[in-house]
Image (cartoon, rainbow, N blue to C red; front, side, top):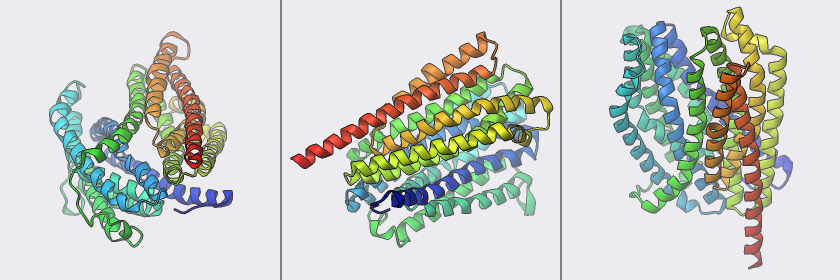
Length: 456
């Protein structure tokens, strides 16, 4: 990452950082996809068990990963301010925090997982697969959280191609281990869906170790001396990490959890409607990787420019990122209008499911446009270390506006199941407007603060 003087240089740096992040996010999503898909080829009970395990684990994982992602704006601002000597200190503190969070999750899981699964009244086989899948995944929590810290450190330096390469390496390893442990090939135990949990946990350990070695010995990262000194836990550093990270984590959790809630409400409709909803939601989630990746790139670039006190450059990156996301969302909208039926056929051969999924995909168009504004805007705000506002806005947008509006429309109008999507779109749109307004306020205050400092 370096100082850019022209807009063309800024566009080049934005895409150099963005494209590896996008590939990384798609690869991480593919890992969960292969866990579910390969378990489904073993048996329907294993598919259901893994799907339940994933649905319980993902909101927790994404929320806590969000807390640890606080290291990204901290490091990017330190680098922008030419305070590289403090980077290793904060990375080590974040690693201690990641270990502590993993221990909390493990202890909570011991007491909560069984009661939750018992309360779901599952078939015995499905219950056991979900339980032991989560038990297997538990062994990968500590390395996953440590990897999140190290990845965020690398990304904050603009070296996103390293984490892309590591994540791409992990995908075939995960698929191979699934092949061995789910189906019992080459003399390995035949574990079914539980094997996908073991495979993923082992993959997390491999990825964490590789990332750690590169962070320590890699030519680009060696100057930061991340592991040259192991610092003791410092309350002041933890306070800063938690102050920034907790709102980020909760904002991500609120977003992932609300979609899980909608899926739960959808269970009251017939099988075709549920299947169509899941198909459209899966495709929309895949498209969401675009604004999410732009969000992460903006956190890095805006943080770097804000740390250097270059308010104009930080603002330009924000405009570039948000406008790129909007432009790409309009392209995906055209794709869904023209090829919506073909997309639906990827997920099902049932004519009823295909027809229903097409309708859901039309609503997904408005999802993409709202996400294109809201998600990158959150990334820019994180670059300024302004995280509490986004946390409050996402909570209000999804849980106070989106879900209640969707429930009312679905239950008391002729829209039926589409009402939940209309509610979420309404919440997303309200959140996008509020976040954009907040970004303008933060940018103005930042510029005024800089002018005041220069005047003094």
